[in-house]
Amino acid sequence: MIKQLCYKAAEQLQNPLCFLIQQRGIHSRNKKAMELVAKGWSALQEVDRVIDYADRNDHRLIPLLRGAKENFELALEIDNMNTHARYWLGRMHLKYHVPGACKAIGAALLVEAANMGDPDAQYELGCRLRVENDHVQSDQQAFYYIEKAVDQLHPRALYLLGAVYLAGDCVKKDVASAIWCFHRASEKGHAGAAIAYGSLLLQGYEVPEVITRFNSDRSPSTGALRKKGKKVRHDPLVLAKEQFQIAADAGCDLGLRWLKTISDDEKLQQQTTQ
Image (cartoon, rainbow, N blue to C red):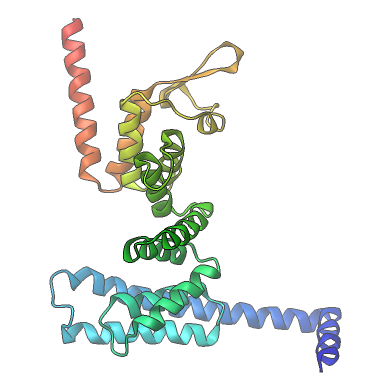
């Protein structure tokens, strides 16, 4: 039986037309599954928009929740390897008051999606293991999944790991590693990471070499001044303003307040020097 399957697979590979049709079929299933995931996600976005202003058991939310769950389930039926559908369906079982919700099923789906490499699932599973359990093995498992998400540059995982390094929580305090995490999360538009990064710059912490090495060609307007010998000096105030602007652009009021404080200080310094 196994030999027959191997021969059949070999024949398909040798036949370009057969292989092309097969690939088109896979692409079509993946596309249909992603369309269903998008529909389910849109329904959940509508639920999240109003859920803070309504009872979680409000019957008016049931059609949206049921529709989202059905779309994610259909997506998995079409493409069982779709980690997005698995992750969102798991979240529905764990978080929302959807008909037929089961926390055990949600946890199993979340673990499966995380082990299949979905960064959102890895981050959420790491957070849940870290918060809901209180022993060393769970902490180790939590960091395992958070670091897996960090490897894929998941912004919230980067921010969380940066906070852990900065506080020295369960790990040796390492400000340089914290700054690197905040820097990469900020590049992804994470407002909290941008605020943390900018604040550390204003406190006098130096930008790690691992960051400056890749940003050595930046212009003076962004805070990097080229010297002889290709050494680069970074203006911490300019770099901090960049970070606070990223936070402000993401809708963070704290970023706007920091920018105003810096602007007021600069105006005051100009007045005192005149």
